[in-house]
Image 1 (cartoon, rainbow, N blue to C red):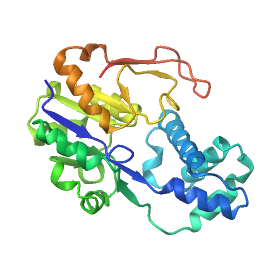
Image 2 (image 1 turned 90 degrees about the vertical axis):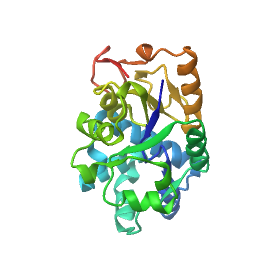
Image 3 (image 1 turned 180 degrees about the vertical axis):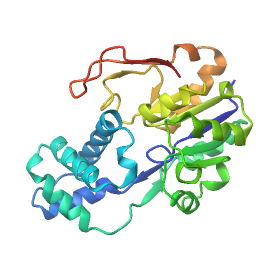
Image 4 (image 1 turned 135 degrees about the vertical axis):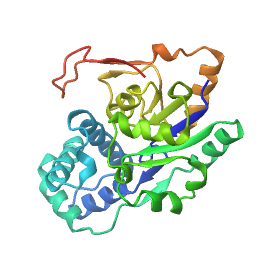
Length: 259
């Protein structure tokens, strides 16, 4: 039985304003895009980097940033604008704005009401706690384990072990919820924790994975808990099988990880 749900932060409990900024930038470049287009391109670029360049996006490397924006342009079918987009984005000194999804506080409250504790395990810079405070999330999350504070990042098992040490939970009684299988699924699997992966637009961007448990957002977590308690979901069956992907060089059946 699940006693605690650990969450990721970015694109799990909170969303950023980056796609809105893409709309601004492309308008300045004379190639207007609608917000849904920008959101889709951002999602696909994120998923590409999660799969092909794991860990690269969290370190504010200029080359990585340039490559990411080129990928965004490729997804928008305007690859020729990559350098111009990078130039505009580099001159924009506004920090990213992270806002809790409209349903986040309600979901956390409902989990608390059903007796399920909630915590955080996140790869984040020192601004993490400020983001949590600004969005009213801190009171709902205990423990809060942040990579920049503990010196280790997902998918390293040690960050999950630190969270379990602080909470005192048996990993078999925990569920981890995040949007990045390569960090979240693989990492939590190493300590025997069950994982639920989020992917808002169906299977878009994660076609290389066969994930039995995949929900659009955290509103689906309650259903996963219900199914686990009813015995209609078997934790042993929650495996990810990686298929050949047209942009990936990994082989079929690379991993079958019990998560």
